[in-house]
Image 1 (cartoon, rainbow, N blue to C red):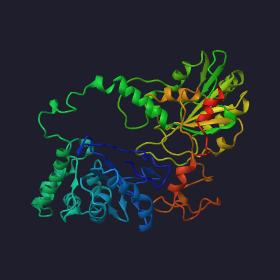
Image 2: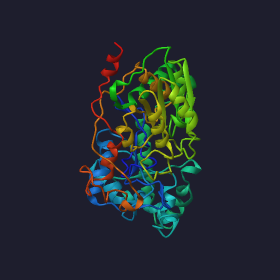
Image 3: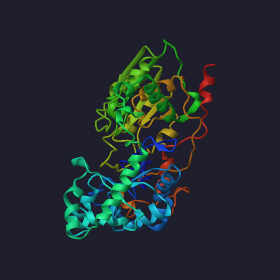
Image 4: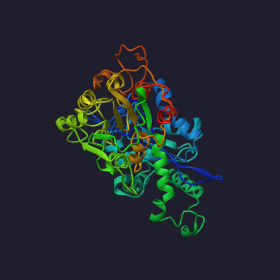
Length: 475
């Protein structure tokens, strides 16, 4: 379950961990993160280790808490990760009201709560919330001192923090912490481990005891990666039924954009990924459909600080069809990296418009991104005939994009359109906590409309595009 960031430009708005249940036993322990009001990574001199989210009770109830409540009560997650930031002055990982009164008592959460990496250390070192490191360790562990809450922490790994290892013993010796608090942590930890079956005998003889690299990259799993990529791609626009493109050796195709042939592991997979079983870029996948295909980057990189439009424009004039692969990568959005704008980076928009204006036919625009993008210009441009939003579709994403462009798979049947336009947004327009618009003359955007609700629809720029129409074109 990922957090619902209050600001659409948040760098880790799509971060998540998952799990499942079989026969009453856990196959994996799902963790809901990051709890709560965690909507800033690094912005304007403030980072997530210092950020104090000033959030009203209404915004907590309406925006930030519902995803976590659903994660616990409906998805039955067995873990929660508390966030680095403070909420109204109190660090999340030391907030008894949040972790005990809300999660444990109101939502009846039954599992462990873990701090994020070094989240205990920053309570003393960055937030200056406690007078000593021992106080930080004690406050975190005593946040659930009423026997219905426990905070579990990482014990291993330097990057994930050694604060408890260094300071818990001295906190007990200084009588700032009772051993019963530590006992509760161990009970909750081992209860979940038991539900996972980790004490059911020799691990090598358990259901997952013999999984190796060959299982990870089995054909079944590679097929699943392709299926997930197919179903994650959304058709936002298809004017004049441009898609699918004809399957004919006679056509010529230009592929333009820095992401079309970039390193698959960094561009298509996004963040927090393992080594791919195989890598196929969008350009490589499109070559399996068209023999006469040529490629130009148009930009020096995804940030597109330097525009090399000449070769791309010359190519666009010559070919029958053009596919532009644009958007974001981890250079624009990632953990510890927020965006300052919802627009495409650098000169990307200028390149797209220039290519569309000069091409023989309307062009196809493919967007890669984790967060929302304001592509109003593309929605309204008559020479941008089709728009596909692909997210970061994983190792099989290139293949899935090509299949949709040429009609071997239908994207989602329809999308929902909302009349939301964000012309410009700056840090000064966001109240503390990063939640609300202070300006906007669009009837769908008012001062009482949270940014989250708007951001959900920014990229969704068309309505009721039936995927069946793609089938009919070449029948």
